[in-house]
Amino acid sequence: MGQKVPSPCIDVCKFRRGDHCIGCSMDKKQKKQFKKLGKRKKQLGFIVELIEQQKEMGGYAFWEKAYRKRCRKKDAACPLDELESL
Image 1 (cartoon, rainbow, N blue to C red):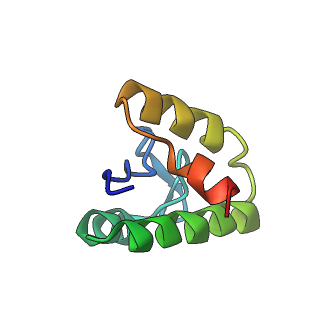
Image 2 (image 1 turned 60 degrees about the vertical axis):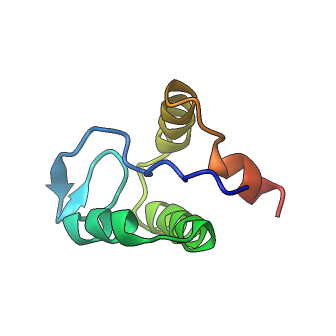
Image 3 (image 1 turned 120 degrees about the horizontal axis):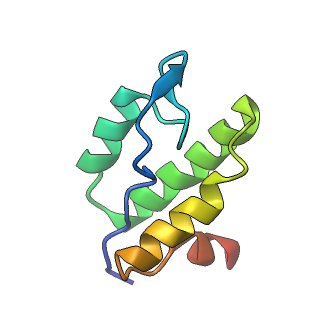
């Protein structure tokens, strides 16, 4: 699959948990970092690390559903499906 991986951002963008977004758990540095990742494999790795970060921080159970909806809206394959099959 060479298709671009949609950003894990779910368009909440409120940095109220320290420096982390209440929607996706990324900080501003991570948001910029994801945009610069060119290869799909690196983007998928980033999402795996982000999911671990969300688990550690807690309170992000809604993110997966919102991200899947975002992928559908962009008519893009959801990378979470690909990660589940690994």
